[in-house]
Image (cartoon, rainbow, N blue to C red; front, side, top):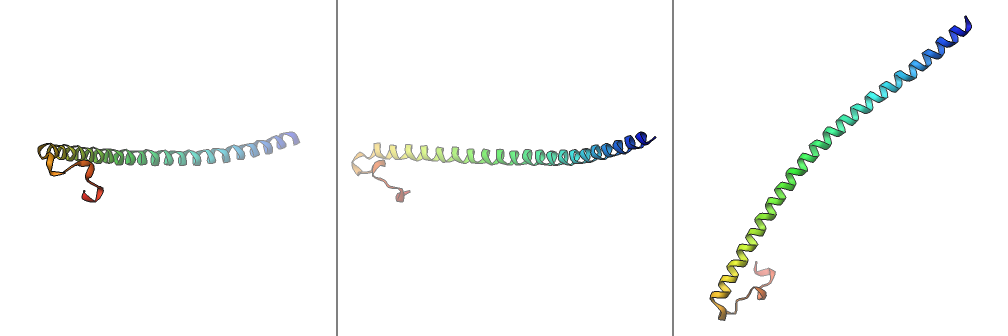
Length: 93
């Protein structure tokens, strides 16, 4: 009879450990789910920001190309006026 009681006590201890581990696992799974959701949200935000920055870069490049073409046209049409893209510094923009 004593062995039966000792076995029941041991079983109860093991069940308590398993229960604690299950609770810890559930908590960790919840944290992982929240982290995963946060990472997906942040990824979407960063993708949108990258898209906006890419559009800004494309716009700036288009403006630089248009300005370069305009300056080349002026330089070609008025070669003796001393105008040159090379003679301009950043302060003139």
